[in-house]
Length: 107
Image (cartoon, rainbow, N blue to C red; front, side, top):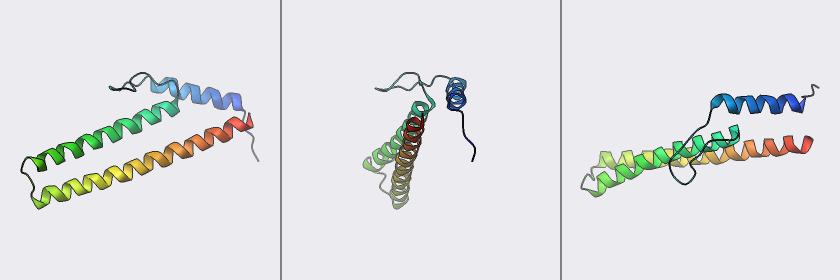
């Protein structure tokens, strides 16, 4: 069994966060990331915001009289994609959070 030097691991994580650089986002959670975990959260947020915007645009188009079956199918597909992405975001956040918790307990 190989042991990991936690100081090297923390140094690696800190270096990875710094190499990715600060990330900004408009809205209530704007600002730079102080960790890669925060950067991952921000990336998921940006991705989900983008998909939500596409769904809103499709819905507006349908509301404005574009209620053809093809538009309805596209909206349904976009909504299902949003659900899939949202589930994956939650799963990845939980998995990484649990891994970080386990790592913290070992220190």
